[in-house]
Length: 321
Image (cartoon, rainbow, N blue to C red; front, side):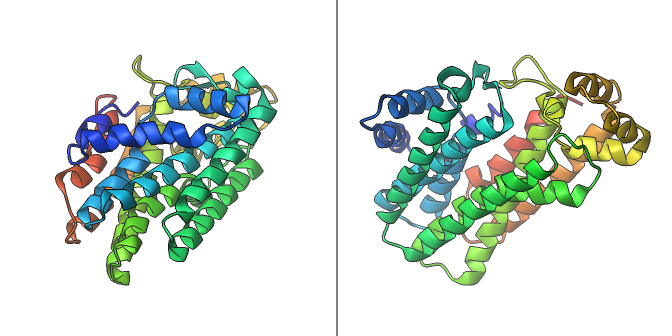
């Protein structure tokens, strides 16, 4: 998924990114067999590395040196990796990026504990930057991510049509880490609060748009996608397209609320998905990504790649309509 994002980051030197990948693997190695195996398994699955790329791009734009940018990049990717391990255990997810999840291969307990180890490694890496402000901001980010997971758990298996609940969940679970990625380099660079706030909003808007697009892709699959189509429905998650469906067709929500089988619910909802709700969802994603573009243009730190990232995200679904 999101292959265009992999192509837009021309401002990141190849040497820097090679060093990033090598160090990432070094950090997750430990004396335990499970941690090394699971860490390698997760990292070898690939991924967009969008969060560390944002750190690198913002870091370069605000004038940080590579020895400040890279530790921050490691930390955010490690935290993201830990959150995936935890989420997959909580959700009982069986496939990710066209491969069995770590919890399916190694078991729930090893996957969960490896997530804890990687999360601690992220904080250890962060401490080396010597900034209490950065550490405090990351702690708040982790708390928000956990709140988002808990809030999603409250609604798990119980579909709803509350758009504010949906937006709150994706902000907490997804966009808050994007927010940190674009805010933290500015803190290390000593930017003024107004500049920091603008960079923070850019990250939040990119994260919100990114998650909405991801949710649309789950309901409009193509052969190039690296995730199970329609699994959000099977897991009982009311993503934005479903919220719009239930708003427009309350009888659909009423019908699935009376069903006990996840498979039956999934098949029934899929049969009622129409292009209109996907278009409406795309428009919301576009609004967030336009906000990101406007915000980054308002700073003195705009670069071609920071403009291309929101454009690349929305481009992933244009061919589906």
